[in-house]
Image 1: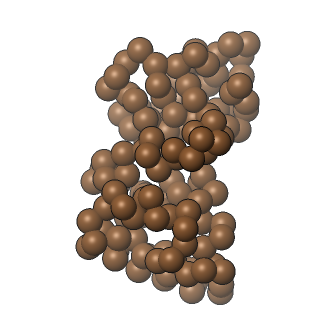
Image 2: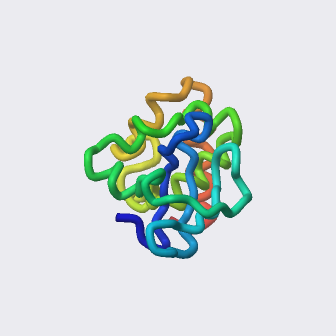
Length: 135
């Protein structure tokens, strides 16, 4: 079930948009107004059938979160900062402080889809951001 405020992925009839990420701004019956953050429609708001959407919570429940994301494509399109922004928006960075950025279990699937150089860049940016926030 899609709810207002959910982070959603597109899995509808247009394969070119698969995996696109956005946030549900408003529900309207069986449809949702979605503000897209990543993908071809990033920066726009569209009206989508809920049948074409899957909430991130549904993806997380079966453990396939990082498997469903094309991490390397997100990195290539938006760089380390864009990837970190997405992970932050989706609550993936909440437990990083206690274990350390490189060892954080919830990020291992993300790292597995990046080159070693890309992982180093993401880790350096996260560590820098956490130091600035006093964590």
